[in-house]
Image 1 (cartoon, helix red, strand yellow):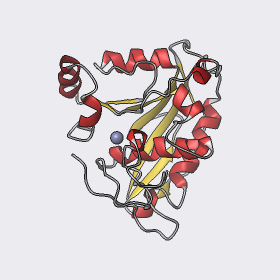
Image 2 (cartoon, protein in one colour):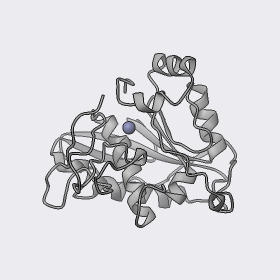
Image 3 (cartoon, protein in one colour):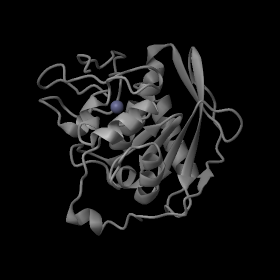
Length: 232
Ligand SMILES: [Zn+2]
Protein backbone atom coordinates (compact mmCIF):
# COMPACT_ATOMS: atom_id res chain seq x y z
CA UNK A 1 0.00 0.00 0.00
CA UNK A 2 1.61 3.29 -0.96
CA UNK A 3 2.41 5.68 1.83
CA UNK A 4 0.38 8.41 0.14
CA UNK A 5 -0.58 11.16 2.52
CA UNK A 6 -2.04 9.04 5.19
CA UNK A 7 0.87 9.01 7.56
CA UNK A 8 2.25 12.48 7.10
CA UNK A 9 1.39 13.43 10.62
CA UNK A 10 3.40 10.50 11.80
CA UNK A 11 6.31 11.11 9.49
CA UNK A 12 6.77 14.62 10.83
CA UNK A 13 7.88 13.16 14.09
CA UNK A 14 10.95 11.66 12.53
CA UNK A 15 14.05 12.89 10.87
CA UNK A 16 13.69 13.87 7.24
CA UNK A 17 16.12 11.29 5.81
CA UNK A 18 14.24 8.47 7.49
CA UNK A 19 10.98 9.85 6.17
CA UNK A 20 12.23 10.00 2.61
CA UNK A 21 13.73 6.56 2.89
CA UNK A 22 10.51 5.13 4.21
CA UNK A 23 8.42 6.79 1.53
CA UNK A 24 10.72 5.47 -1.16
CA UNK A 25 10.18 2.01 0.18
CA UNK A 26 6.45 2.49 0.13
CA UNK A 27 6.42 1.68 3.79
CA UNK A 28 4.19 3.36 6.25
CA UNK A 29 4.59 4.16 9.86
CA UNK A 30 1.54 4.93 11.79
CA UNK A 31 1.89 6.64 15.04
CA UNK A 32 0.73 5.32 18.32
CA UNK A 33 1.92 7.79 20.83
CA UNK A 34 4.29 6.12 23.27
CA UNK A 35 2.48 5.28 26.42
CA UNK A 36 5.75 5.29 28.33
CA UNK A 37 4.70 5.27 31.92
CA UNK A 38 6.38 3.76 34.91
CA UNK A 39 3.59 1.19 34.95
CA UNK A 40 4.56 -0.08 31.56
CA UNK A 41 8.10 -0.69 32.68
CA UNK A 42 6.72 -2.97 35.36
CA UNK A 43 4.11 -4.49 33.07
CA UNK A 44 5.98 -7.66 32.40
CA UNK A 45 5.73 -7.29 28.63
CA UNK A 46 8.91 -8.85 27.24
CA UNK A 47 11.13 -6.40 25.38
CA UNK A 48 12.86 -9.09 23.30
CA UNK A 49 11.87 -12.34 21.69
CA UNK A 50 13.60 -14.90 19.53
CA UNK A 51 13.20 -12.98 16.30
CA UNK A 52 11.51 -16.00 14.73
CA UNK A 53 7.78 -16.35 14.27
CA UNK A 54 5.25 -19.11 14.70
CA UNK A 55 2.39 -19.08 12.21
CA UNK A 56 -0.97 -19.78 13.79
CA UNK A 57 -2.10 -23.23 12.79
CA UNK A 58 -5.68 -22.06 12.54
CA UNK A 59 -7.40 -21.82 9.20
CA UNK A 60 -10.89 -20.37 9.03
CA UNK A 61 -13.83 -19.90 6.73
CA UNK A 62 -14.08 -16.95 4.39
CA UNK A 63 -16.26 -14.13 5.71
CA UNK A 64 -17.76 -11.30 3.70
CA UNK A 65 -18.41 -10.90 -0.01
CA UNK A 66 -16.48 -9.77 -3.04
CA UNK A 67 -12.72 -9.90 -2.86
CA UNK A 68 -11.61 -12.35 -0.21
CA UNK A 69 -8.18 -11.56 1.18
CA UNK A 70 -6.27 -14.41 2.73
CA UNK A 71 -4.15 -13.60 5.75
CA UNK A 72 -1.85 -15.35 8.20
CA UNK A 73 -1.26 -14.48 11.83
CA UNK A 74 2.23 -14.91 13.23
CA UNK A 75 3.48 -14.41 16.77
CA UNK A 76 7.11 -14.07 17.71
CA UNK A 77 8.43 -17.02 19.64
CA UNK A 78 9.22 -15.84 23.13
CA UNK A 79 6.51 -13.20 23.16
CA UNK A 80 4.56 -15.23 25.68
CA UNK A 81 1.25 -15.28 23.83
CA UNK A 82 -0.40 -17.97 21.78
CA UNK A 83 -0.42 -17.55 18.00
CA UNK A 84 -3.61 -19.58 17.82
CA UNK A 85 -5.42 -17.42 20.35
CA UNK A 86 -4.28 -14.22 18.67
CA UNK A 87 -5.41 -15.58 15.30
CA UNK A 88 -8.86 -16.44 16.61
CA UNK A 89 -9.17 -12.98 18.14
CA UNK A 90 -8.18 -11.31 14.86
CA UNK A 91 -10.51 -13.60 12.93
CA UNK A 92 -13.40 -12.62 15.20
CA UNK A 93 -12.61 -8.92 14.73
CA UNK A 94 -12.66 -9.26 10.94
CA UNK A 95 -15.86 -11.33 11.02
CA UNK A 96 -17.72 -8.94 13.33
CA UNK A 97 -20.86 -7.45 11.73
CA UNK A 98 -19.50 -3.98 12.54
CA UNK A 99 -16.28 -4.79 10.65
CA UNK A 100 -15.20 -4.21 7.05
CA UNK A 101 -17.30 -7.04 5.67
CA UNK A 102 -20.29 -4.73 6.23
CA UNK A 103 -19.23 -2.88 3.08
CA UNK A 104 -20.48 -5.83 1.03
CA UNK A 105 -17.41 -5.96 -1.17
CA UNK A 106 -14.56 -7.12 1.07
CA UNK A 107 -13.96 -10.43 2.75
CA UNK A 108 -11.25 -12.18 4.67
CA UNK A 109 -10.05 -15.67 5.34
CA UNK A 110 -7.54 -16.80 7.94
CA UNK A 111 -5.08 -19.29 6.47
CA UNK A 112 -2.28 -21.28 8.04
CA UNK A 113 -0.23 -21.82 4.89
CA UNK A 114 -0.19 -21.26 1.16
CA UNK A 115 -0.78 -17.99 -0.58
CA UNK A 116 -1.67 -15.03 1.59
CA UNK A 117 -2.44 -11.41 0.78
CA UNK A 118 -1.16 -10.07 4.06
CA UNK A 119 0.38 -11.18 7.33
CA UNK A 120 -0.28 -9.84 10.80
CA UNK A 121 2.81 -10.24 12.96
CA UNK A 122 2.75 -9.63 16.70
CA UNK A 123 6.28 -8.99 17.90
CA UNK A 124 8.18 -7.83 20.94
CA UNK A 125 9.22 -4.18 20.95
CA UNK A 126 12.85 -4.87 19.99
CA UNK A 127 11.82 -7.07 17.08
CA UNK A 128 9.31 -4.48 15.91
CA UNK A 129 12.18 -1.99 15.90
CA UNK A 130 14.33 -4.42 13.87
CA UNK A 131 11.68 -5.17 11.24
CA UNK A 132 10.40 -1.63 10.93
CA UNK A 133 13.90 -0.17 11.19
CA UNK A 134 15.02 -2.27 8.21
CA UNK A 135 12.36 -0.37 6.24
CA UNK A 136 13.60 2.97 7.58
CA UNK A 137 10.85 3.36 10.16
CA UNK A 138 11.69 4.29 13.73
CA UNK A 139 9.30 2.62 16.12
CA UNK A 140 11.22 3.35 19.34
CA UNK A 141 10.02 0.18 21.02
CA UNK A 142 6.55 1.66 21.30
CA UNK A 143 4.64 1.81 18.05
CA UNK A 144 3.38 -0.48 15.33
CA UNK A 145 4.32 -0.24 11.67
CA UNK A 146 3.17 -1.43 8.31
CA UNK A 147 5.77 -2.70 5.84
CA UNK A 148 4.82 -4.14 2.47
CA UNK A 149 2.30 -6.95 3.01
CA UNK A 150 3.01 -7.11 6.73
CA UNK A 151 1.28 -5.42 9.62
CA UNK A 152 3.70 -5.40 12.53
CA UNK A 153 1.86 -5.10 15.84
CA UNK A 154 3.89 -4.18 18.89
CA UNK A 155 3.28 -6.68 21.68
CA UNK A 156 3.26 -3.78 24.12
CA UNK A 157 0.29 -2.18 22.37
CA UNK A 158 -1.47 -5.53 21.94
CA UNK A 159 -1.21 -6.25 25.66
CA UNK A 160 -1.42 -2.79 27.18
CA UNK A 161 -3.54 -0.85 24.71
CA UNK A 162 -3.30 2.91 24.51
CA UNK A 163 -3.73 5.60 27.15
CA UNK A 164 -6.12 7.28 24.68
CA UNK A 165 -8.45 4.30 24.43
CA UNK A 166 -10.76 3.51 27.35
CA UNK A 167 -12.42 0.19 27.97
CA UNK A 168 -11.35 -3.41 27.62
CA UNK A 169 -8.17 -4.31 25.74
CA UNK A 170 -10.25 -6.19 23.17
CA UNK A 171 -11.57 -2.85 21.94
CA UNK A 172 -8.13 -1.47 21.31
CA UNK A 173 -7.06 -4.64 19.54
CA UNK A 174 -10.08 -4.28 17.29
CA UNK A 175 -9.03 -0.71 16.53
CA UNK A 176 -5.48 -1.78 15.60
CA UNK A 177 -6.70 -4.54 13.29
CA UNK A 178 -9.58 -2.59 11.74
CA UNK A 179 -7.41 0.48 11.14
CA UNK A 180 -4.60 -1.43 9.46
CA UNK A 181 -6.83 -3.72 7.45
CA UNK A 182 -8.74 -0.58 6.43
CA UNK A 183 -5.53 0.67 4.81
CA UNK A 184 -5.12 -2.68 3.06
CA UNK A 185 -8.52 -2.36 1.41
CA UNK A 186 -7.88 1.20 0.32
CA UNK A 187 -9.00 3.51 3.09
CA UNK A 188 -6.96 6.56 4.08
CA UNK A 189 -7.08 8.52 7.29
CA UNK A 190 -10.19 10.38 8.39
CA UNK A 191 -10.80 13.07 11.00
CA UNK A 192 -13.44 13.57 13.69
CA UNK A 193 -16.80 14.40 12.08
CA UNK A 194 -18.08 16.41 15.05
CA UNK A 195 -18.09 16.70 18.83
CA UNK A 196 -19.71 13.75 20.55
CA UNK A 197 -19.74 11.61 17.42
CA UNK A 198 -17.98 8.25 17.31
CA UNK A 199 -14.44 8.47 15.99
CA UNK A 200 -13.94 6.86 12.57
CA UNK A 201 -11.79 3.76 12.74
CA UNK A 202 -9.54 5.38 10.15
CA UNK A 203 -8.95 8.35 12.47
CA UNK A 204 -5.58 8.31 14.24
CA UNK A 205 -7.34 8.16 17.57
CA UNK A 206 -4.11 7.83 19.50
CA UNK A 207 -3.24 11.38 18.49
CA UNK A 208 -6.28 12.66 20.36
CA UNK A 209 -10.00 12.33 19.84
CA UNK A 210 -10.75 16.00 18.97
CA UNK A 211 -14.14 15.81 20.65
CA UNK A 212 -15.09 12.42 19.19
CA UNK A 213 -15.76 9.33 21.25
CA UNK A 214 -13.30 6.43 20.99
CA UNK A 215 -14.57 3.78 18.61
CA UNK A 216 -13.00 0.58 17.29
CA UNK A 217 -15.39 -0.34 14.45
CA UNK A 218 -15.80 0.91 10.88
CA UNK A 219 -19.58 0.41 10.91
CA UNK A 220 -22.11 1.03 13.64
CA UNK A 221 -24.57 -1.58 14.83
CA UNK A 222 -27.12 -0.30 12.31
CA UNK A 223 -24.72 -0.93 9.44
CA UNK A 224 -23.82 2.72 8.82
CA UNK A 225 -20.22 3.61 8.01
CA UNK A 226 -18.70 5.74 10.76
CA UNK A 227 -17.19 8.35 8.50
CA UNK A 228 -15.15 11.47 9.02
CA UNK A 229 -13.60 14.02 6.70
CA UNK A 230 -10.67 12.77 4.68
CA UNK A 231 -7.33 13.75 6.20
CA UNK A 232 -4.28 14.19 3.98
ZN1 LIG B 1 -3.17 4.65 9.57
